[in-house]
Amino acid sequence: MVDFKQRGQLPIARPLAHLMLKSAQAAIGAQRPDVWVPVPASVQRLRRHGFSPPQQLAWHMSRFSGIAVRTQWLTWVRTTPQQKTLSRAERQTALAHALQASPAVAGKWIGVVDDVMTTGSTLSEAARALLAAGARGVTVIAAMRAP
Image (cartoon, rainbow, N blue to C red; front, side):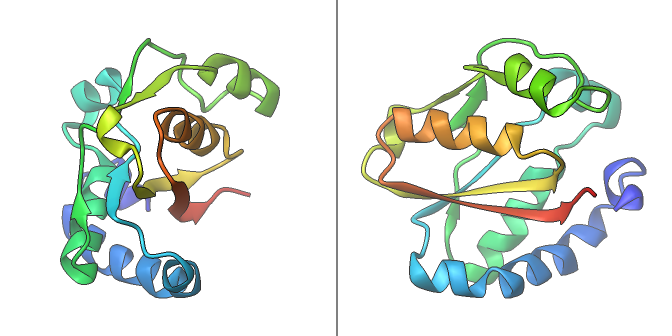
């Protein structure tokens, strides 16, 4: 994962996305998402690394599943501190109402794609924003879970 996220080894995204879909088969079978929405990368991350890992994963997941990707349906409405050094409580506070979803999500089941889930705070905030904008439901899929 370090090669993918930190070193920009983008070819790793394809097999990783395939594994993500395979491991999430039961959840997707129970409720197939209408679209994949990647957790948006921060401006700082894009400046530092030049790409968004969740977006790369979502594009490959789209190719494998036939489900469209909508990269603009979830956006940051304010800057948040880097999450790495924050506790669970600090992450939840820092991320509260930091994401906004497009009205286009209304009535749709959204598959949220992220690369790494640590505390779940970012994915919870994404789900909150999507549901607040009228999404019918949310399924979250992350490539890795931090211990």
